[in-house]
Image 1 (cartoon, rainbow, N blue to C red):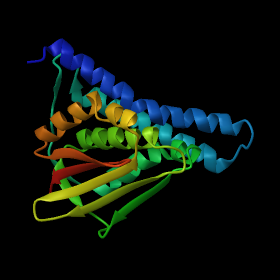
Image 2: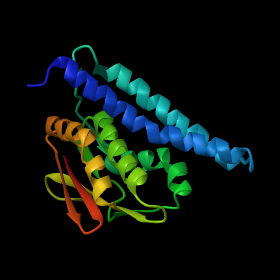
Image 3: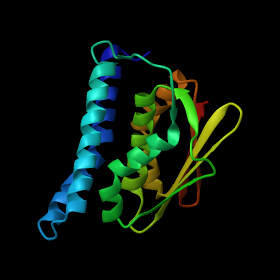
Length: 203
């Protein structure tokens, strides 16, 4: 059994991991502003920064670091909205790396029954890894579907063996623990240079 101190340390490391890439996106945008100031770029910076502030505020309101415990909530929400919001948070980094990101679904709305902020953390973590560890000019594919019990999400990207080890470390274990608390699950497969993460959430 892990001690409370160990759980708290893992939690803090995971949060730092989650917010690093969105902050990097802002830094890239600010560097671009030195050469080509545009209103569109300013709007993107504002949206990413607003997203980060909301994310941190929600964590501060819902997590108890002292106890190493998260107070789970149950609510219905559209998982596609969460995915699109986390894509937006990473938009500038996606552009910087010239990545092609495809969100594939046959539905406009796929509602799940879970804790929205916990799910948001799961997808920020997974998408951050996909963007961060994909080589430049590659494709990231996100497929979303549902059956009678679950909404199923598959995230596929290109990754080397060394990068695969990084993207399946500490963060993945915390995600597994989070999804277990939500009655969901996650697993991954590796085929040549493609790594695929599969997430199931109750509907």
